[in-house]
Structure formats: C-alpha cells, structure tokens
Image (cartoon, rainbow, N blue to C red; front, side, top):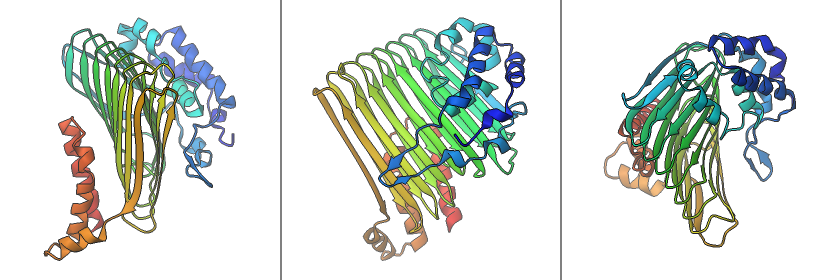
Length: 404
C-alpha cells in the first residue's frame, strides 16, 4: 500500500477521541484494533472495466488532510418525540447494550483500509432508535463540515412493526484547500419494519468523500435508499442491502451530476439471502465538462433465495464530448427460481429531440436544460421524500443554469 495514513496517527490520539466521547472499554478496543490493522489492509475495491481502473485511491495524499483531533462541524439531529435521535455521546450513555450488539455488525470495521480508518477516528455520529410499533417521520440529520477532515458514523435500529423516514445532508461550511469526509451508515431493520433513508451529498468540490451505507433487512422488512451525489472532487461510495429475512424488500434510487473535473465511483448492491425477496435498483446521472463517472450494480442471489425478484437499470447522460462514463451491471444467480434483469446505457442528448424543441421557438440552451431535467424525472418519481426530491430538483436546475 502506497498510502501510509497510519504513520501520522497514534494510539494516544485514538484514546483521546474515545475518551472525549466517554466510550466504554470495548469500543475503545475496537478502535485500537482498527488502528493496528491499517498497516495490513488494502484500499476498498474500485470498479474496473476491461483495460481500465477508473479510480486510484492510492494517489490520494491522505497525510496532508487527515487531522483527527481537529474535527469541527455544525450538526442538526432532529426527530419526533416517540423515536430517539441521539448524538453519539448521548447514545453511548443511554444505549450501550444496543451499540454493543449492532456496532460493526453489518459493516466490518476492518473490511478495508478506509472503514478501519473511519472506525479508529470517527468523532461524530447519530443513533436513530425506533421502538416497536412506532412510526417516525421527519428525522433529519444535517452535517456541515468545518474542518479539514471529518469522520461520521450513523446507526439506525428499527424494532418490529416500526417505520422511519430519514433525510441526511452533507455540506461544507468552512472550505479549505483539500478536505476529507468519511461516513459509515449501518441500518438494522427489524421484522416487518420500514426504513426510508435519503441522503443528499453536496460537499465542497475540493473535498474527497468515502461513504458506505449498508442495511440488514429482517423478515418482511423494507429498506429503501435514496442516494444523491453532487459535490466533491472525488466520491467513492457504496449503498447496499442484505435481504436476510424472508419476504424482505429493498429499493436503491441513485442520482448524480458531475461537472468540471469531478469523479464519481458509485456502487449499488443487493444480496438476496432468503426466500421471496425483492429488489429494485434505479440510477440516473449526468456528466459534463471533463467529469467522470463509473457505476457498478450487483444483484447477488444466493442458493437459498427461492422466488427472488431483482431488477436494475442505470442510465448516464453525457453533456460534453470530453466527459466520461461507464457502467458495469452484474447478475450473480445461484438459484433458478429467480426473475432478474439488468440494463445500463450511456449516451448524449438526442439531437432530434433538441431540434424538435428549437424548431418550435425554444432557446437551444433552455431546450437542453429541459431535456436534462426531463432525463431525471424517472428518478424523481421514485423519491418518496418530498423535501429531498425538491432539494435535488433545485440543485440540478441551479447547476444547469450556471452552465449557461
């Protein structure tokens, strides 16, 4: 491994972070084990297509912008009274047993170099706990980064027959030359519970972003993800669900818009592990200027996943000849009782559509903008969280008009 972030880190720093949060000994040990493992762990797998590695995480100069003891943020954590929306330190004090049961249960702290780095160094986080039978709407988690690096952890636990809708936003307040944001999200969806988790990432275009969001869906549980990426100069992200309970379901809706020299490396994955499970993966994105995107969608059907339904479609629209995009949808089928499909397209604006609109008096720039906004409509229609859909529509429209 060429990057040696651990050379700049010490056990004393990790102990200070853990001590400031008043964490129990088992959690400190988890952090220290992750720190020790850094020397032997590899970077996360990146998406590869024939003849090309699209993303090179080894080139990032982590040592210049990872500053673990100087984390600064402006955070809102808001939820209804009948659900608990807690800061990390509050959760440590109120729900240690819950944390000990679920922390690191879905995303292995030592899964790769960057998950271990985040485990060792996270200093901020949110725990959402929804008791049995509670319907929790309008949970908001807003994080504004004001430091060179910020490591964030989120845990969502829903008990039987409960539901929650979460809207998460990441943005940048005080910008610096280079910044790093890391986020790990674990969702534990109990029997017959429903989780909607929407995320809108609009960090500074000088920032680097690594996030992994992963859920474990229990029997009859539903986990729906909405993942929108507009910010950063480089984003490496995974959104995935493990359908471990019978008749569990998931939907992963993605949207991205890259311009200038932005680079998006996006994973969407679903693991069908039980009978009668259903998944739907829908992603649409735009690249402009010299921006680059690569998408990998994986539907993995296990041998015990009888009566599986799994569908995937990804479409990318390139607005310039210099932008780049690639998609790698994959089906891994180990059970013949499966209905599954996948598709991906990469293309440019249809010139006949553009000619049709301009021939009827629409300004060429306005016509192009309307076609791009229309391109995103199938994704907008899948976003059940009104506030997130409206925010995303506004941000896309603003970026289009800046291009004019």
